[in-house]
Length: 320
Ligand SMILES: NC(=O)c1ccc[n+]([C@@H]2O[C@H](COP(=O)([O-])OP(=O)(O)OC[C@H]3O[C@@H](n4cnc5c(N)ncnc54)[C@H](O)[C@@H]3O)[C@@H](O)[C@H]2O)c1
Image (cartoon, rainbow, N blue to C red; front, side, top):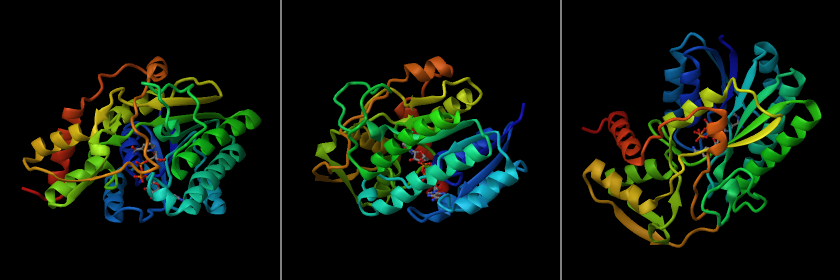
């Protein structure tokens, strides 16, 4: 059965891929303010893809503007909300903390208020693996303590989880927080490692790596993320849930650079620096809960994911 699904942050990396998948079977209403944190042409290109679908409707608006947001909710009356709009980037959040708090906390309350007013029972929202902070555990499971974020960004994501719990308790909303682990792939974010390193290698620019490249991330391929979200959309949930969405393998930054060099056919120029205070050392998702709720998927290995990314990058940037 087709549904009317409202997706915020639809011109973003995860948002575009998710809307595209949902549009196979559903009506999708996308919201985005197209902010200029990174090249807006990439956001416009993603939107172009979505606008080809008749069942897609776009509203350019800022989620901090409750009046306008509420009008869209009234007009559309969606059955599910997937909230991905956010100020993103861990390091940048120290430079503009108020902006992060405004979108990620006030904006999120606006979404929750609109859902409460319109009696929308199911809300998925993006959280982040960054909430695990300096946790020493090998694998990050949802039940670990997440009270010590290392960045303003992570603090806003943790705040959103806490607010979702209160709204769920008070107003009987089903709120499902998705803790994404370093998502990458075609149409990805230029501020994130894989895109940034690729661009630097092509442009002969130095890649700045922390702590001699020993940092590790659980890199998760975009198609796997979309598969999981699509699978769990119709599942029954407890009122307030948190779910890890990751690949379950820690890959060191040095390995990412090696793979990029092989695929691009060129050596990277490296400069070294100390790990900033905002950075988590390593991440690795425990996805036992996700597997129980969704269904099992053969996850995309990093070699294959990087190959797909570099191939897309070459076509997108007209590199022969
Ligand atoms: N990509 C990852 O690895 C990753 C990891 C953890 C969590 N997340 C979370 O997943 C979500 C999607 O991330 P992404 O990587 O696609 O980022 P993205 O920046 O590509 O997408 C976010 C979108 O939200 C929009 N936006 C920002 N502020 C807004 C506002 N006030 N009103 C309306 N729209 C606004 C932006 O213009 C952007 O298009 C975010 O909530 C992010 O925090 C992403």
